[in-house]
Image (cartoon, rainbow, N blue to C red):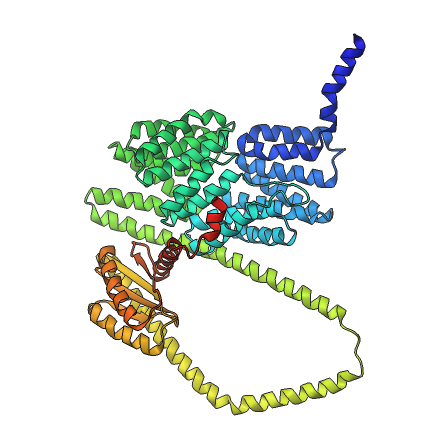
Length: 592
């Protein structure tokens, strides 16, 4: 009898003994998204009980998992400190493959704190190292982060390529030699859904949203978060009944969250959806729940943003005194924390309120303040992007220097032919000097022409900006058309320009914006008027060329610049290409 009990005890004990730490860590990865508090407890347990038996790689991986868990729990500063130590240890231990994971964690934590100057360059470095060390798990996660940030900042041109690579790489995440950390499949598809929805392609947005909802790991807490996003998207695509059903399901599944901070974020999103439906009393109750939990965790920026939602609810409930008091508090807080993106939104809310009260001087005052805040926000983001691009150039230069140094080391020592080659080189340099002297006058003429052309281009930009500013000041509609003319000959272009003068009005502005693009600015013109003009131009184009020409179109919004109008017109043109199945073949193959 005693022997049988001993055998049974051994059978129950042996599987735990032989369960490797790496296997246990594989099981922790999905748990971080589903239940970060439980994941954090298990990580601490492994570190306390097995720290002496873990290999350097296993120890580093456990810190990678802990870093991403801290972010999920809202402990971004602690995650940064841990990532710094982890990256240094990975370097000293010569385990280079761990570095992109720590850099991605550090980047995500900085972006969560609004520190884009640090976060974006780190993300680029992580992507470069993930490629160098062949880490598809790190690469797909970092690309998802960069795509989401690009979507939020409306940098759609770069997002398409990130999404394409992300979907392609994600299929191979389990082909690398050692597992580290990977993104949920449901979140991969959700990032694509957010992009297509934000860029105006509702059909693809809903398709990838469906893929996200039906992904294998879309369960529990992950499914809850996706339901909230789906409810928001379906509301704004007029699928109101689906949106309500998804909101009800999300509210019922909120118990799947084990972190009070995650619950707070969910309460805030639920409140915003109730606001969309005009259910302000229900929205207020969820906002108050969110604020209680956020204040207990000292999430001051999140509290500020949720108070904005509460102020909007108070305005809608007919309680302007309470709303204005809240707005005054959060405006002061946004100024103190230099959160210019939030400040812009706050001023717009105040502008809209005073407009509704027919207090036009006050409304105009807050409109100007919103413009100033927008400029400051753009400066901050542009500064972050400049640092990001500079880091890319520095990294490329470092790689080039490394190649040159390797080439230098591999060269043989100086031989007898060296002097002869130096004579040839000196002769060649002399000939170049003579040629430069002869061509000097010709270059001066070219420089004069270039200067005249640059002055002409500056004049064109000035004219375009004047038309834009006049439309903004007088608040009338304005549309922009952009078409690729790279395939037209000079003769065809002249004929098209002559035909354009017949189609356009005297107030319209038509210019060859670049060597390959033709730009048309149409004051006092809505989208419907634009479509009529496009049809007339397409008739003219067919007379001169058989090629297909697609016009990109954008309409002026209050804070648009010429660059943002042109970007949206280019995006419209890309979307039309995609709808004709010129662009998204690889996306279709991923979804099949």
